[in-house]
Amino acid sequence: MTAQKTKVLYTAQTHTTGNRENGVSRSSDGNLDIRLALPGSGHPGTNPEQLFAAGWSACFDGAIGIAASKLRIDLPADRAIDAEVDLGLNGANFLLQARLNVHLPGLDREVALSLVEAAQGICPYSKAIRGNIDVEYNLI
Image (tube, rainbow, N blue to C red; front, side, top):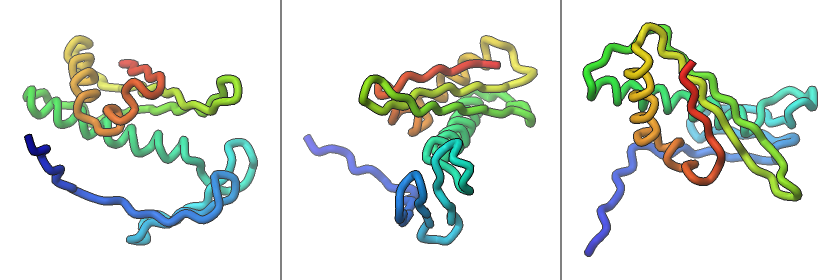
């Protein structure tokens, strides 16, 4: 049996020098050009956890949109997702844990919960981390 070939829709390309303490990351198209800094260091820059939270929450919102479209549900214009990604330490091991707090004002709670559940199966970020880190999906 031959495996189905994946159709690549987009490939992000970045070049990073340094590390999370004092690095620089640039995308091949020039749209991303950022400094990296440790959280709380006071140095200018962002960190990998913030970047992951931004990417994941944007992707998850798109996944909610796909789920809503399939179910013919109109989404509120003021919907939002607040992502929280924790960098933790368990003994000597670093780990991530996260929460997605989903705001879908004006939707029936059961409908909103069904969209959040469906989005977990659509969003590639959610699928990639499933079973790898502790995640809470909260409807706010």
